Amino acid sequence: GVFANYYPESNFDFGSIVSDDTKVGEDNGGQRINEHNWVITANTFRATQIWTGNYALINSANRLISAAQGITPVGATQIATYNNILGECYALRAIAHLDLMAHYSTDYNSATASVPYIDYVVVLEQPARNTVGEVIQGIKDDLNLAEGLIDSSITDNTRITRDFIKAVRARMALYEGDNQTALTLSGQLMADY
Image (cartoon, rainbow, N blue to C red; front, side, top):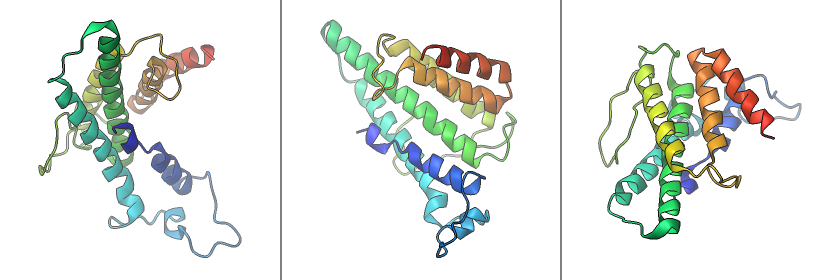
């Protein structure tokens, strides 16, 4: 159920339109012209899709993390499955916050207002925005928890793996301006394949 709320395509789609990855086709009938021209209004579907989609992912991950506190796995197989599922939730919560920060922060200075970092189940609350530094710290904490829970032997590309965590860390290092860490982590990922 948590994975059902993960739509990375929204980020790629929007990014490719507002960057120089695509251009308006010769036979274009007006589709997405505003986005190509960087005219983004708050009430459009595209403007809200990334926000609502990522917060739906975060809230579903938080619901599972909260519900897991009432479950006691029995035996090595159940414990491993339990830990991997929780690890995936923390990793998905981290990438969702990173995507939100990337799209809705005016810059990556740690004191700048960013997006709300949510690590609890939201029902009707409207949380205040955190600073970029607070969001980054929450992402790092989530990635550390995920790495400690996900079995290092898992390599199934339909699941969250430690390579996924490393890739998220590399991307976050770029946003922080830590190019050396980003290069090191990216190099490790490429060497593994």
